[in-house]
Length: 191
Image (cartoon, rainbow, N blue to C red; front, side, top):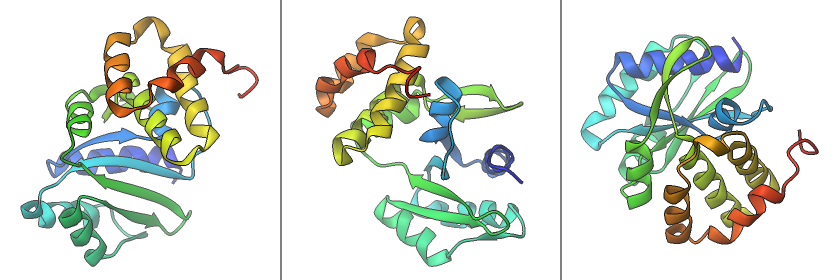
């Protein structure tokens, strides 16, 4: 089972168990910007402490070959952090980020969009929020792939973006200085 099939399986299982989610990270960049390799799959999930049993049931539903620790799931939900699941046959990692209580995180989760991706309806981070989150990650670690990812989505989705929204949140998040880079990156050179 490849990453696309894993992505679709996780989306179906989360929907079946009523766990609100959105795809983020590399796969939202792939959807809105460019095809590239990814080392993992990233999902933001909305799970409160009383929903621990629901998320565990969803994880069990994924079937054999998936490895995860109950204690890591419980701790991530309590601390609003993340846990991961490993698909043993391929070694692919699925990161589940618990939705944080911050203003931007609530806003971007509320703006997630339902799209038909890879032949299946799924919830994904909006193009604008994909750009902003990638710029946040760039700000934290100065890892060039994050700003390049943001530039791909920016340049490819240019005519459809809500730039007022992006500028507002870029200023609030302290990443507005990187917006000027998005037009300067040669996406052909970085493809």
